[in-house]
Length: 305
Length: 226
Image (cartoon, each protein chain N blue to C red):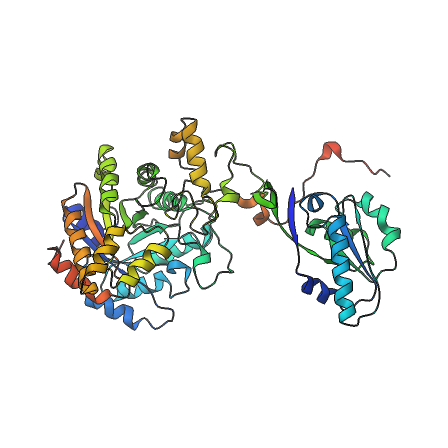
C-alpha cells in the first residue's frame, strides 16, 4: 500500500474500479458540485476533480477536493502543468496532502488558447512526465525537484492519463510505459468511442505486460445528443468519434437513450478486455446519470474495502 | 534571422501624431531581408504616413531612409547627421534596433514601427517560421535537430501530448506537431528508443526566466585602458 486511498484499495482488491468526474464551476458556489458528489457517492470509488479544464477559469481542484474530503468522500485531484511552475505545483501538493487529499492525477492540460483567458501566459515549466517523476521522488525519496529535502515525508497515490486516440499511434504504448517508469500507479484514458482502436492499443499494452504494472481505467462519456457528439468530434482536443457512432445516433429515435446505451455497451466491453482495471466516467453536465450507468453496467454495488 | 512585421499604419500614425517632423528609419539587415523594415518598406511607410497626416491636417514633413544595421553603434553614428533635427524617429528595426538607438543617442525620441515576432527563417516565399527561442541551453542534439522548446506549444521535453492528431498540434490546424516530426525523424534513423528516456526538468535559468541576459566574452573584449 502506498497512500492507503480507497482508490488504491479497490485497485489492489482486483475489483473493477469505477471513478466519476466532477467539474468545478465558474464561480465559488460549489453547491452543485457537492450535490453531484452526494448523488453518485454509492456508485463511484473516487472522483476526479478537474483543474481549470479546457483552460477555463474555475474553482480550484484542490479547494473542491478538500471539500469532498470534509464530506467523507475521496477526490482524485488533477494537476496540469499549464498554469503553475514547479514551485507552485510542489507547494500545492504539500497543501493538498495537508488537507487530506490522497490521489493525484498528472496531466499536461489543454493549451490556454482553448479557454477564456486566451491571452494568458502558458507556464509549462515542467511537462507531465517530469511532474510525475518529480512527485514520485518527492514521495519516495523525500526531496523536491530541486534536490532540497522535505521536512516531513509525504504520501499520495499517483496517476496519469493516456490517449490511445492521439498520434503517433505507435508511440502511445511507449508513452504509457514511460509514465509507468515515471511513477504512475493508475492510468485514466481519454474518452473511448473508437473501441477498435482502444483494443489495438490494449493488445500492444498486454504484449509488453504493462497492464500488470499499472491499473488502466478506460474513460467513457455518455453522449446526450447528436450535437454534442459532433461538437466533441470537431472541437475537443484528443477525442476521435467514428462516423458509425454518429450514424447510429442519427438513426436513433431517442438520441439521449441511445447515447446512454452506447456508453453502457462500452463499459461492458471494457470489462471483457484483459488488462482493463476499471472505468472512469466523465458525465460532464450529465452527472445525475452516473448511478444509472454504473447499475446498468453491472458494477453496483461498489466494493467496501 | 530576426522576423518582424510592420505595425498597423493607424498605430504608427497615432504614435506620430503629436510630432511635427518625422524620420522613418529602416534597417537593411534581418528585417530588411524579411521585407518588414528595409529601405523599401521605410519609403512605403513614410508615404502612407504622409497621406494619413495630410488627411488629418497635421503639419511637418515625413522623410525616410534606411541603414545597414540599427543594432550597432558604429552604424548608428553614420546616420546621426541625417536624422538630426527631426522630432521623432519611427524605427523600422526589430526591438533590438530600437533600443540600441535609444541607448546610444540620449536625446532621440524613437518609437517602434514593427512588431518583432521571432527568430526563424523563410520556409517559402512570404512565409517565415519560428525556429529558436534563445533558451540558452540548446537541446537539438536530443531531438534530432527539431526544437521542442520553440515548436511545441507546451515546450514538452518527453514526447507528444494527447492533443497531437494526424501530425498537427492541438493549438491550430496549420501548426505541425513538433513531437510528431521528432518521432518521424527518430524513426527514420531507427532511434525511437531515445524517446523512452525521461528527460529531466529543464533549467530555465539560462533563458529569459533567469532575468535579462548579457553574454560576456573576455577573450574578445577590448581593453579600453587607462
